[in-house]
Amino acid sequence: MSFDLNQFFKEATLRVCGSLEAEEFLEDAFNYLVKFVPVEFMVLSYYDPTEGKQTLLAEASIKGGRLLKQSLVQPGRIKSYSSRPGLDFQVIEKAKNHPTAQPWITAGRLEPEASLLVMRLFARPDMIGTVIMVAQKGETFNQKQQNLVRMLQKPFAIALANCARYQELMELKELLRQDYRALQQDYIHSGGRRIIGVRFGLKGVMDMVRQVAPLNSPVLLLGESGTGKELIAAAIHQLSTRREGPFVEVNCGAIPQSLVDSELFGHEKGAFTGALAKKRGRFERAHKGTIFLDEIGELKPDLQVRLLRVLQEKEIEPVGAAEPVKVDIRVIAATHRNLEQMVKEGEFRQDLFFRLKVFPIEIPPLRDRKNDIPSLVEHFILAKHRELGHAVRPEPEPGSLDLLMGHDWPGNVRELENTVERALILSRGNQVSFRGLGLLMAGGGVRLPVYVSQDPPDQSLPPLEQVIKGHIQKALYQCRGQVGGPQGAARALMMNPSTLRKKMRKLGIVFGREAAGLYQKRPGNSSHQNKPADDPLY
Ligand SMILES: Nc1ncnc2c1ncn2[C@@H]1O[C@H](COP(=O)(O)OP(=O)(O)OP(=O)(O)O)[C@@H](O)[C@H]1O
Image (cartoon, rainbow, N blue to C red):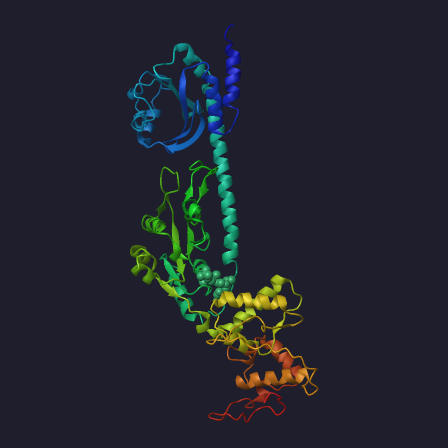
């Protein structure tokens, strides 16, 4: 039966152009061509003329196709060699005589005596890659076989150009997807969140934040869990010149060990089983922005070394990448652990500790800034009642403040936030109660008694309005008649000052100029001489 060239061309072209994945079409082409030419394995490489960089894309042999994506290390030589004319199609009798085959021979991937067929691929007018066929042991490519392969120069070039574009698109799509996800997170992280206590309990912290934010120096946030370290980190980013860039958070204690490498440093496609697409790590995603390394004390020793390298060299090495990637990032780290002690005990690298603690900021626990509690409670009631979709915004039940101020808050602001949310979920009507939530009084761990009366209603109980009136008057007395401001009764009662004024007018309580001197405490006098006459609580 005579050999049909047209049939060969058609069948071979269908295989070469049958897929957009390099390893797939190369494998299909190999399986067909091996019937006609003595090829042991073939390699497809991609050449980027702008960067003068050559990448081995894929290889195929009897074992199947495989994605390689390895950059060749001699761009200068390749550039000059590839611009040499007349080398579009060559057969090299012995690989050792070919200028660019040497690294392959050294790497043990090519026999020095092997015969090669090198076919360059062009997309007008540039060379975009090569197909290299390595002949089976002791064989070479005769003229007839060379002619067959040469017929496929154009189909291979088209397949490679399409594959390169496709890869580029896929990578862009993946980057966009990652950026979109990161942007969503960034929005949650810094989107208009208020910090309560900036002029009170966090004043010292905020002064330091303003000082350091415009600089590029690393910042180390120290403080117990739930004190607001992440919030402060986001504020530093917002106040910095990097605010338009990303704010990427990494909880060093929460990433599973098996994923740490690729999560932080990223990976190339095919770097390991399951790495189906190139992935940018969090360091790379934080480029031109801020990376927040929470729970830095949990970082394993090998990662401490790599983080130190990132801080020193300002570059990262994605898994499977041929070259490091430069990153421009600002690092903010945080921990609730005593890093200094960890250094002494050999659990944390001293050099990394010194790098990170250029500007340490200590965030005080909530128990040391209890004056912030009323504003925090008001803030969380407002935010949570909206989140929960409650129609009315409830006010804290009278006496709540004593209860909340008496608690030690070992879980800090996070515990307070959760407590408010829980209380709101349980609240009925327009009052929110903090009783029965298991809040412990400071120091003793004594549960506040929750009074549940089994008796019939006490007929001698004063009417509710009278109790409220007396309670407000008591607050006015304690606040020396002041209604608004940080020392005012509204704050003590966790109420909006205008709501309190309205209520006082309704209840007939005198306040402001009308009450001049009425609520002033006399120095040294504890007998409450100025107490309101109709006050049922005195
Ligand atoms: N000053 C504040 N004003 C308003 N909300 C705050 C404040 N401090 C903390 N929060 C809120 O309390 C919660 C806990 O804060 P954050 O996560 O920043 O604490 P953290 O110190 O980073 O905790 P961890 O060490 O456990 O990671 C968050 O919901 C945060 O928004």
